[in-house]
Amino acid sequence: MRADLFDRYSYADSSIHRLPAALKLAVALAIVIVTVVLPVGRWDGFMVIALLLIGVAAASRVPGSFIVRRLVTLEPLALGVAGLAMFQPHGGRIFATMLAKTTLCLLTMILLSSTTPFAALLDVMKRARVPDILVSTLALMYRYLFVLVDEAQRMRRARASRTFRPGRWWTWRTLTTVIGQLFVRSTERAERIYAAMIARGWS
Amino acid sequence: MHIPDGFLDAKTLVVTASLAAVGVTAAVRQARAQLPPRKVPLLGVTAAFVFAAQMVNFPIAGGTSGHLIGGVLAGVLLGPSGTVLVMTAVLTLQCLLFADGGLLALGANIFNMGIVGGVGGYYVYRALSRAFGARAKFLAVAVAAWCGTVMSAVATAGELSLSGVVPWSVGVLAMAGVHMVMGVGEALITTLVVLAIDRTRPEILADGPTGLPLRGTAETVAFGLVISLGLGIFVSPIASTWPDGLEKIAGTLGFLERAVQTPLASAPIPDYTLPGIGSPGWATALAGGIGTAVVFLAVLVIARLIVPRHPASRDAS
Image (cartoon, helix red, strand yellow):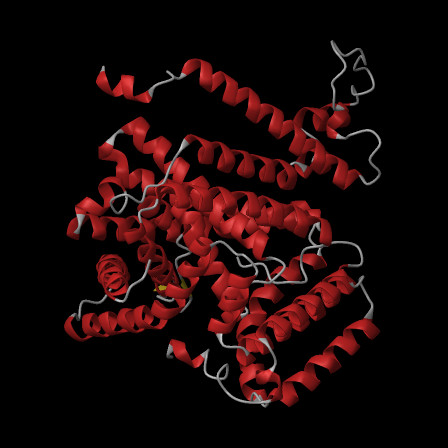
């Protein structure tokens, strides 16, 4: 699985994609807040939000199969914790409400991230006076995220093609060595990036 | 243990977001004051590294696998403020790009995994490696990684129970129980990774990547206060819902009613609840927070008195 599969629809084009990022972020935040404060068992409220989100999904032309796949990979985590809610009076109702709320919020965030380029969100943060150092950390992280994930996979493949020792302990040792090596390479890359930034007039 | 939106209620969201905001502000202030410009890219690339490291799956047993959280690993490599910045970036990006962890719950996730897990774990590491010397460094890393994982899990359980979605006794048993096992994996991975870095580039571990340990008294105080306040608020419901051991025994043996009700001095916060505040959950949490703040201040004053004012003079002696 390649990591950039996640980010493949944010640069597509639709009426939703063309809306300003600040507006989309504000609307997403509003939907999440409304969903979170709705009391237990307000099914009509959840239905309205669900219909709204389905409408947005249709207008954005992000494939339904992609959205459903993302939901299915994220849902088990929520299910596990929501399951703990069953151990109390009215647990079933609380469980169902939590599941509905979580699904709606996940859907909102999936739609936001697949209709808005991350760089546009960073721009919004910058204008909202988020501290510089956080914005530049996020920007550099986004830039090198896929590079490092691919590098980690290449290192694991190289290891796998050269070592045939079976056993769990051996696997753990090789995998942790790969992570350690990845950190060393990351720090060296950071030094090169700084040199490149200076060369291009960063201050 | 990324908390999605829809689990925490408004009051818990406000408390966690404020705690996270204080922690992140302290980290940003310190980075502005101390971080040399040439280290700015290192924060971003380390954040990408933590993310990439989280994607490496380790086989556990019976076809299941787990992965690193990386809070304590970042702590050992970057020091407390660097950890808060890196974990904040990791969690923000996971939330905005992958919908992993909620938007409103972002504060809670930064508090649990970045501040309690990462910075708390870092202080466990520092205390242990100071107490037992350089020889026990890797053992200190392992213990710190385990503690960091379990502490985050306990904080998460506390937040879920304060929100009224999961009863405290069930939540803490499940969360802490599961993460006591997961913590062993985290400890093993973190230690082996630190060992691998130590073998290839020992100078990185000497003091964090040169110039990045980012520690100072004001920030230590801020982080300590945020962690202890948060744990005080989220974990103090123990006191109300679990009768303490002696009270329980007294109740079953039937001598509770014989206990004489003449306290030596009336406690300012009787029975961990504040008078005048309606809901008992809130009152307990608030009392826990105030109590923690008082204890923290007391410890701070005592530490000031005991520890020599100029650390440099201790180095010279």
